[in-house]
Length: 190
Image (tube, rainbow, N blue to C red; front, top):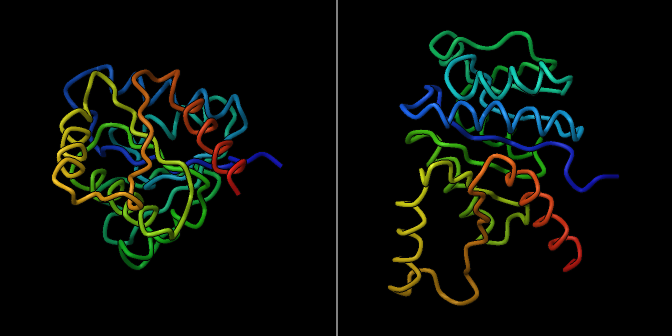
């Protein structure tokens, strides 16, 4: 059995200003599908969410969309996916996404993307999981966040024993390999 069967991708429900973000979402979806890795994502059809999901589908991959009822219309739920799950609220959505995924990738996005990424990182920091977390730092999008984490470390708010295990991919082609590399390291340490 492969270590990584499904990756949860957090990303914007908008495309962002830089066309490189959409290109990265398209490339990530293609790479995942070609490797037989399924997508778990927020269920929307707009922005980077829709791009990554459609790319996985276009290349023969499996997509699980998880969307809360109140966002079903606002984010225009993508109905072409193999598994469309409508939840009661955001808490149920995030827990299902966590349970269904073997790893997490953060493409560029807004506050929701940041919040979901930080939550998974916090859970890892508190030993609630050892699933890989990769920031897709496309065109240096995540640099301010990476700087903030370094600042927290320097100010002793991230102390020894409470390290933050986030891997950083600078290009779309590096994303899945970073996930797989971290999964192998975790498996070897177990």
